[in-house]
Image (tube, rainbow, N blue to C red; front, side, top):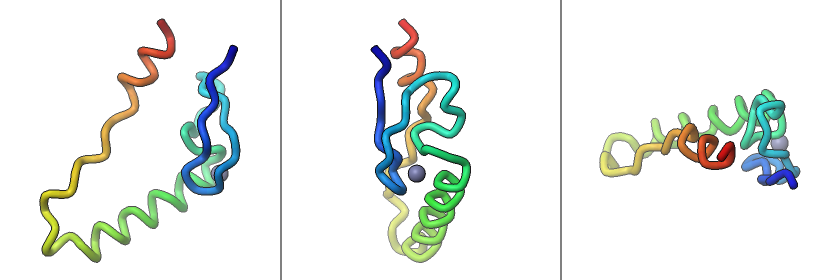
Length: 67
Ligand SMILES: [Zn+2]
């Protein structure tokens, strides 16, 4: 059974497999749009909010799924 995640941008189901190149996004387009939003927001808040959590890398999560 393949684990699926929801695309953070459009909510579409994305199979969590190596074939889903842009996971957790459904496509490169959603990934770029969401990343753009995130950078924009960070830029806006950046001056006063330097305790914002780092975006966690996804590699460890991928490794767990492969087990
Ligand atoms: Zn999407």
